[in-house]
Length: 268
Image (cartoon, rainbow, N blue to C red; front, top):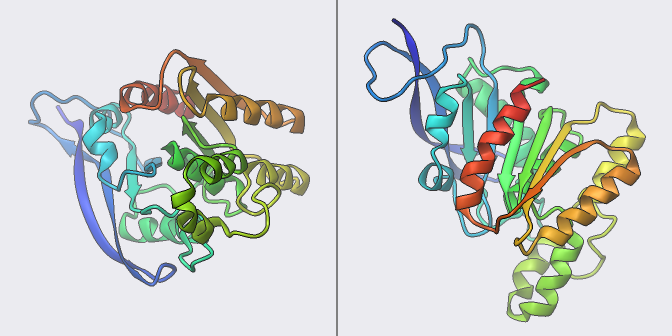
């Protein structure tokens, strides 16, 4: 009997947007007959894909090292793309590295070229991430690129203006990094890097709103930022599947929550 298994690829390639070689880890469905200890679904035609984005202290390998994502998606017959974005905050930074353009515009096209069985349909592509990656996921779906039909943030830094101010007050030695990413002059609130502002613009534009999901643990240092953001989206008339539970800013929580994200995304 033919069943679904997964192949794990480490891909080194050149990004024109970044102007340098970079990496991504990719999980692809594979048809197998003799795999022991793994069961999975086999899809006909092109398969949906999740772009899983890493956090501040992580890299493109961390999702595979900290969770069982390969095993989880084997049951669903979907692809997973895990790109390297360094400490760039998924932002077109003031120091010149265009990580937002790379993730939301260039990378989806590269993946469709390299892996033709990935679906081209916007509704089949999810951006999801933890912490900094949760911010990047929502940003990629809201910024107008039209490559992502849904976005999910786990412990996401969804109020980047508040996060920027906290770092300014609590970590003065890191200001050169933050200034290089977001700038030192104009405030983040209301800028191209503010999710609140991107959501408002999207609403006003009358473009289809991506489906949005967020989870945050009540013991997480970003919990209050999440609550404020969820309430702000509600005031804008934007629907968010917002969930909270006991939990903190850790992979113990995210390994559990990513399975709920996948179920939510595919149940459409």
